[in-house]
Length: 460
Image (cartoon, rainbow, N blue to C red):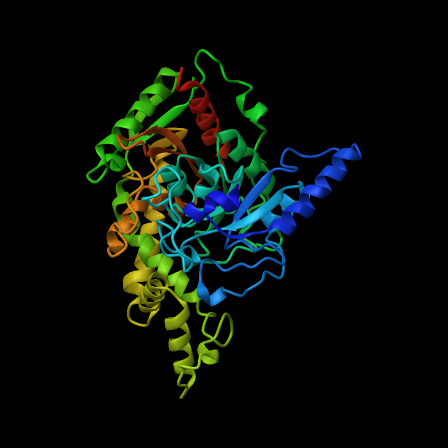
């Protein structure tokens, strides 16, 4: 089915048929032997192509890594394999996770299964599209500024961005190290939560993974105190005023506000809150991210790492700079080169204090806004994106408009807190609208509880 349907969608960069068959056979043998198996055993999954799977090509959607084969498993992959997961392929993505549409892949854009003329979102668009198209049960993506939640919203699936540090980043190709997080995309909240329970946990190979948090409870434990007549009773929900300002599509706002009314009818207390520094979050993000990109991608220079233009017959080499410039010019895409240049500029002498240092101070203010809000409420509810999925090519030549697609997701990454996107309706074109539920640090339990309850009772 994948091979047939994916010709139209391009969600996959590689199908790992031999690996999948071997893993499936191992699960069959375990079942035949009467061994106890976990909830993910034998369940097919797909992995975003910036997460390493031992012995499988990992390109990060870039030509510079076209022939790179992963020499080891990422920590999350080890956990999935231990549970008997069946990995069927690597999914398409914006090159090095830089983008909001999966149009920046060196291997062609992914199309939204809900409308093949539109983008699936990005940068985890391949993972979201694969789940939405029923080409897979669940997938892993990575989220630096909304790259799990925004495509989940555009494709009408569930995506969770965990608290920074809950899931190990070891084996994830770094884009912006202080923001990147691996998380699940699935068809419903229960599946996404189960996957997160599997991949979470401290890792000695990742110094940013955090040991001081409680393990995510089971679905049964999360729902044990829920009263069916008033399932959200006792939960205080904050509505950020700044997330309903100019720029949000009327149909998106209407759908989100209707979802809030439904949550109130389920017993939740609704309160308006302010996140005053959110208006600066996008500008802050696009200083910090390019700066970290500049450092993380310095290795791809044709000498230390990746494909080299030295092998090209057209290359004229007079010095090392010729190799650097021509390798990057030939094998790195426009958006990647743009961010490297911006980041190098922001970190350069004379501009570090004016740009990078100031952006980090604003990041602190953004985080403090959320901390103050969570003194009053348990979770926040907001749109995932200001619009539904836009047409392929519509924003390709306007980077600023493209960046605005992540305006409601970026602040969460800057603050390092968890958030989830789940479907809450459709616009007049039948395109999914994403509802974003945001929680305190390491309080994934409450956002999952709210998501489970909304999913179960909203239609009643």
